[in-house]
Image (cartoon, rainbow, N blue to C red; front, top):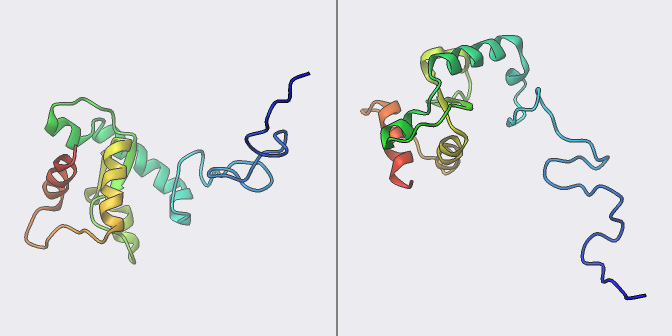
Length: 134
């Protein structure tokens, strides 16, 4: 019988703790399958209602539409950060729908402390910045 090298986990029948899995093998599901930073405000009925309204209001991704690409909005994003106040968190004028790719790009910029300048309208500034690298 040929010897088959084991190139991975020594016990393949045991689920490994990797991204998306807990040590017991179950998956992380903070609120009905959506990914979050762990903020409890995302797991409320009011947020789910607001999210649904925003996605109905802007069903297509604005940065993609600017490039002439039609993509559905899958994520609801805060245009301006909502660090402290709940008003900024639930303010519908501060929310917009983005596709997963544009949301990831914007989140990466925000992670590097990029913010829209005070004298510029933030929505159009983000659209230009996201499209700059696409």
